[in-house]
Length: 560
Image (cartoon, rainbow, N blue to C red):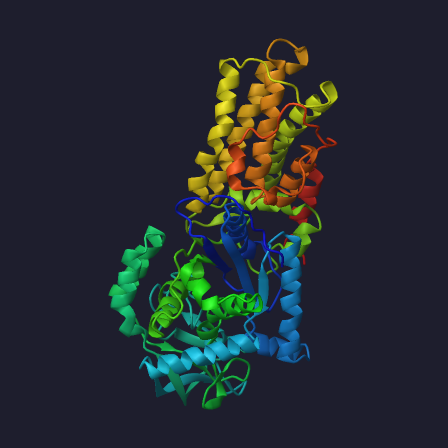
């Protein structure tokens, strides 16, 4: 993938380098709106912002290829696991690309590079005394004649008593049960028996003090997340079973009959994927990683893994690869106020959505409703239509069309401004301060608030244009046109990380060469379009979302 690098002067709080990752998509089904809302879209917007600030930033990801569900589904479809995950790796990448999620590199956890790296980390942890082997009792289904790891045992969470939870993660409270209560086989529903097997464990409980120190010293981590992670540590960590009795996974060195637990190997793919990508470019990957800002974008359901397991493993290999600087964590997306469920057909596939509406409509809506918190957000079809029509179209689209259309028709080129009156000076100041209003919010990952600043800016200039009444061609008309066109220039650059296609359309209508991404973020507040500049061809940027379309989309829910 092509990198969007620029020569802009970077903001003081940003390092010259950054690596951005998202929670890995499981290679076992299509990407839906719930996947992109909390992780991939915020990561993509942030990466685009960093690149426009001159940061050498790379956004990498990989499909999560291992685990029992994939093995069983591949068998059902009469495919090898390798064939099965290859299909979903390509399908996921294609769907992400259609949504303008621009990875610099998209790889897979089943890559030879990741397998080698996972085994290296295991051996290193073992040498450092953080791995031990012990005999355990594991659930076994006599009906299906197999051991039942992780998601093939469901029951009651011993901590919060939530029912129908997986044995390796309670989605209600976010904790990892030591042993699930009232267990049942997720395949046949029968109570499993218990059989002896030998597994490797990672000494997670030995890292409590180091994890606490890291949490206290990292000022970029969300305070509310840190607080309950610290509570988990203080209540006592448990050692982590990192072995699974299945055939599809990274084989354990010295015992090829077993494989690593998916959460041992998948987050290591953050590192191995970056090493592969940078190595192919002739860059020292480890040096780059350790000198960069590291971002891991996740949903709130995998906080335990990213705040405890992931940093502890890096600490256990003496921080050969630094711990993350940022772990932006967001809540779950519900659909029409109900929990998304693929098994109940209560979801919207990303590909299906994009067959009806432009990617930028969804990007706008999901960013605007998604705060930087663990609060859940809700996709509502009626609200989606209202926001697109009354905010994106009636506000941004209206200003672009009015300001550029009027200028093109009346003047042909940008006129020389008159002496600025107080209203004009205020408008000019709005342009010159937009950068300082947006940048801190972008750096702090308050993307919804930053996008709201653009909308407020657009509202202001719609009112300014209406107040100045340039169509009457009275005194100050030239200044109004001059400043309004420059406001559109600011909007095109400010929207570029959020709505890349729409921002580029505006850019072309402004008559600007190249791409918005060729220009530094700081250019947002420049009065860049000067008298004599020739605009491009003007046409509506957006198309209204019709009530009949929304009605049809609502009727489709649950009928797949």
